[in-house]
Image 1: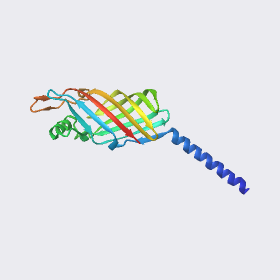
Image 2: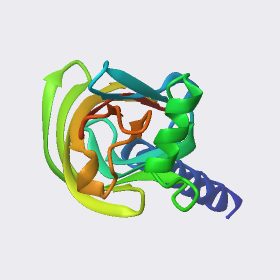
Image 3: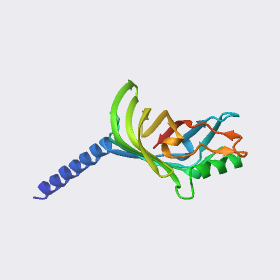
Image 4: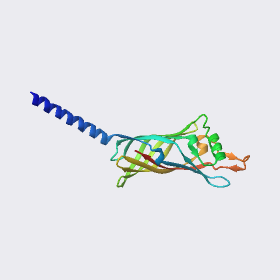
Length: 194
């Protein structure tokens, strides 16, 4: 009888190990690594081109199956006052345009993965749609990027062109309107999740 109970416990332990291992291989959620991720906003003005760097980002990506890049969820949050140029007056105008007193974060939330193309050796081209919220205005956008999977590290690399006015953001002006920024922006990102 003891042998039968011992064998039953072993079978149960092996079954539990199998279930836990297969769940870990299949579904996996990773967190954004801020100090190893970059997000740059590129813009123009009537004087010169400019850029902002994101100092503070958070987010998660969840896979149904990491090995085949089946994405279940993706969320990103950028601290609005963490978008800095290194020029105090420009940063002040940016924060005013983004109304950072009322809207502390810029958010992206995945809605749908349209397609995933395996480009070889753990690199995938991904076409998605998601909701981007800037200054309290939410818009559905398409967002395409490459994903590189290396063990338990995942890197998203891509860029997206948007217009400030699509999010009810007035392009900032300076020096009594003599310096005006263009409406079009390009957002470039390299985002590491682990």
